[in-house]
Image 1 (spheres, rainbow, N blue to C red):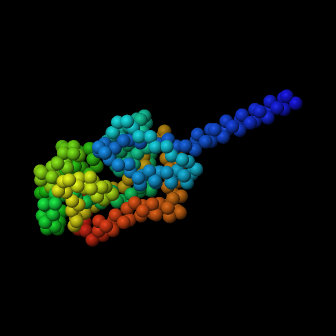
Image 2 (image 1 turned 90 degrees about the vertical axis):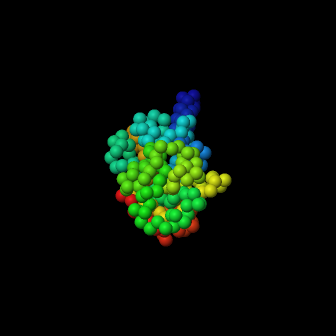
Length: 268
């Protein structure tokens, strides 16, 4: 009788251990970079997309942000070292990071390649008269050198001041030391709203547009993480949940900002 009890007890312990291991595996710890822009809000779209994608493959998500803020260059470097963070959403040149792997569905459906201009309200008439990219070239754009837009703007012959911090760029617009600050469609309204005490606005007629796709990246040592995420994203796409989530966060914004009727200047 005693051996049988011991055997049953051992089975119970084994099942409990297996259940515990499965429970631990079902939680995915995502170590993400804290944004470099001070007081930057949590990216609710990214959180929702990651949460729903992993849920599609039976996983729950635990978001853990780095103590130190990181710009995009630092994020890519940390991912490459596979130390402090294990996932990021980036737009980088193909094959520029040999140690990184990525998902294949564009996270923002190209929306981040559409830039609107934050300007001083006193400059509105000046921008309304701009009809070509050449008209825009003499004006001073504001952009940090470490941001991907900086090289794109320079490559297309635009005049760019890349030496200022974010706060200083806002001040430069207010004092008219800079003319415009290209910002993502997804972020520009919130950024202008944070500066309500200043004389700033979203310029209503112009859009800069270039190919700029974001994907989720991780180190190649985290292949299982990217594989699971890819599977979840595809399931969301097939079910229509990906499109529904995108429309929830950006559909009304695209209409409100009149993207389809703006003067779109195509950048290479």
